[in-house]
Amino acid sequence: MATLLLRLQGPMQSWGTTSRFDERDTQLEPSKSGVLGLVCAALGRDRAEPVDDLAALRMGVRVDREGALMRDYQTATGVVVAATGKPDLERTVVSPRFYLADAVFLVGLEGDDTALLARIHAALRAPVWPLALGRKSFVPSSPIHLPDGLVDLPLEEALHRYQAPDMPRPPGPLRLVLETREPGHEGAVRLDQPMAPFSQRRFGPRFVTTHLTGAFDAPDPVAA
Image 1 (spheres, one colour):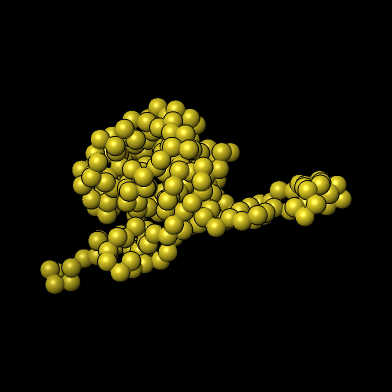
Image 2: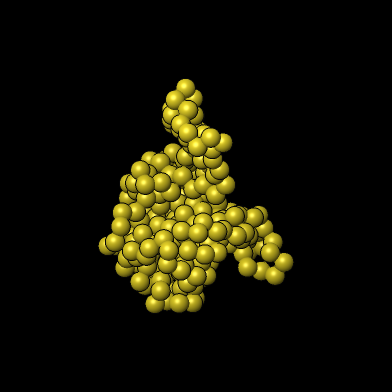
């Protein structure tokens, strides 16, 4: 089992999964639909193309730096009223938009298809289209591609072990959010599992569990 690691770091990130109408939300860590959308941009895969092979990958996130949840807003005047189909020039719509400020994540994609992971790894180094952190205007401040990011390790171990000179592993316990496929579907629900090409905007549930990497580092009292 191999794992491909990605670095998601930038002054602003947004990973919404339940946005409707004027309000745009964000989760506290990258969504699977958002990460796979980024991968599609790197590969140059059109929104109407299938993503079954990417959706089959198992995703995990190591939170190296929790972002600060921030709220912004946009305004628009003269929007079309659905009931009449005509613009209302007297009405101003306020659209709240949430995002994470100054967050850093290490994302892992685990799968049996090493050739697919290798293609993604190469594409992240020379992406076909520009890459963004959840919204087109949220550009990364450090490369998403990690030269040593393709490792022959399971997801949990890859996330726990990884560090590099330009991405040292922060001291202390770190939060891991891991996709689970165990019988019974234990864990919290995330509605960000792509069920069809992105152009159809169909997303199903997946289940995740949260762990602290400090559990791996805890000294064994019996051995003391």
